[in-house]
Structure formats: C-alpha cells, structure tokens
Length: 397
Image (cartoon, rainbow, N blue to C red):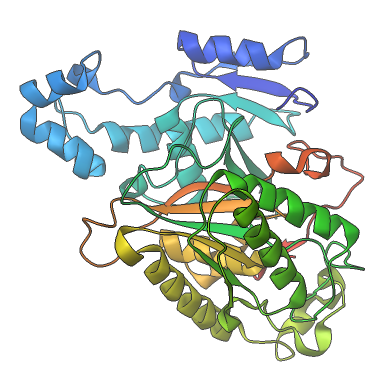
C-alpha cells in the first residue's frame, strides 16, 4: 500500500516484529532510521506470555478489570494503559521534534498506535479500545503548525488495512457504514457546496460505484441518504448492488438531518476566500451540531434494532466528522479533526448490542477508508503542489 509513498524518516518500536515490518516497508528508501523505546507495545508485566485461560485462572479479578476497565487496570503495582498514554506523548515529542522531517513513517503496535491516535485527538486512557487497529493497517495524522502549541492536527485516515475494512461478521453487533457522497459536477477543493443540488461528476459516479462494490461484501439491513440527488444516486447504486450480491434490496430512506451544512449566500464560494465572513450568512454551527446529534441518535437506534443491524449512510464530510465526534464525546469545535474524501468509507461498530442496556458506545473501526478507490484514492504522502482539502472549524470541504 505504501510502495509509492515518500518518507523522510523512519521511527519504529525496538521489538523484533516491528523492526522487521519496518524494514519490509522501508525497503531501499534513504533517510534516518530510529528505534524509539517509547513505541514499544504495552507492558502487561505478569500477564505477558500467558494464554487467556491461564490469565483468567491466575488473575481472575484483575483479568476481568483488564477486559472491562483497562484504563484502571493495575498489575504488579503498575498501570499499563496510563503508562502507555505517557509513553505515546513522549513518542510524539520525539517524532515531531525531528529536524527536516515532513513525512514520517512510524511502525509500532496495536495498543501503542491506539494511544498515539487518542493522544493526538486529546482523548484520555478511558478511550483505550475505542479506535480499532488491524495488523499492517495504515493510519495518517497531519500536523499543521499554526503559531500555537501544540500544532493543529487532522486524522486523515485511520486503520486502512490491506484487506476488507469490514472484518469477520459478529452476531449481536450493530454497525454504521458512513459513505461520503461522490464528487459533484463542477466542484473544486475548498468550495462551500452546502445544500446545492449539483449532480455527480463522472468521478463522483466512479467513486459511488466503487463504494457500492465494496459494500457487496456485507449485507446492508437499512439504507439512509442525505436529501440531495447526488447522495441519493450513490445510495441507490449501493442498494442495486446489494441485490446483485444476493442480499435483499434495502430501500433508500431520505433523512433530512443528513443534509450538508447550509451556507446560504456563500454556497459556491471558496472557503479560503470567505474567511471570517461565514458568521451570519450560514446555518449556525450550534444549529448544525444539534441537527447532526439528531441524525446520530436516529442512526444509533437503527443500528441497535433487533439485536444489531448494519446501516449504510450516504452523506457529506461535515456530517461524517460530526458522527465521529458524537461517537467519541467530542464537541462541535472538533469537527475539523477528521478528513474524508469522496467515496470513502467510515465504519462505527456497536459491539454486543443484544446484551447492552440502552445504547452501547461506538467503536471506530476505520475512517476515510479509500483503498477500494484505486487510482482515484488520495495518497498517504501528498504532492505539495496539489491542494487536496480546506479544513477548518466546520470540517473539511
């Protein structure tokens, strides 16, 4: 997946499996290579080397705590998850403090990569296991110096694995599959498209088709769409290919709360040119946030129906950012933390909804998954001459 990407430096865990993985990816690239002790996997002390049944037998109550409340888990007088969060903050200082490094390749482990992503988002150790990490998957965080400390950051994508993003089906799980609507005709990066009903471009149809083909791997139980025609067209393509895959045809339900933010008279203009003129001309951020919360609540209910359903949703970038923020307990000022591209897939799982009392909290399986788009996917390391997105407090457009 990364063979065509350019990296200035490699940082990796000192453990042998991470070192070997790093060397496979790095290949013949030139640049400094650093083994960082702070990137080693979580230290589980007396738990390490035991099979699960052995851990249960020897450390019954502690094993249950590790399963149910990992952030508070203690063993041998140590707090492994809190220690891991501390080490990840050290790793960020070492990586971001390196000289002449624009694109850094970091190769580590499941738990420490979770901690790196969570600390980048400002999330505490209680969010351990809320951001899934798969073997050999790629996550990308963009840091942008802005004259303050720390720099602004954007999760460009998370957990983009070499294989299917869906994983093996698990009975009793609910799932939201969020599909960003394909690119509109005449759209340019940075345009405040808003609620305009512009049709899909040729590229937008290709993106929608490829997303629909990817979803043929799973059965979609319910289908929701933004009210604009281009989103409904993408949703109908998903429904058609579900039928072709041998699944029942899911009817497309239009949900008005999934419409894009209304930019009023600013629609069609470039966000960078509008600048501070957004205030007063558009749907307020508070109104958008309340509307997105209504959509989130309704979609959660659908995913929890009948012991767990797979719900596909075609909507816009700010709405997908909002769904992720609601899932993780972030606020409206955090919308710009997540980037999504046309035709991309974001998955939120709700484990064991059949046994949960009320609504189970969501686990983010992946964000902005684009491997299915092939040549149309935005690369991990980007060409400086191309402007891929404009991101701000209101999300990425």
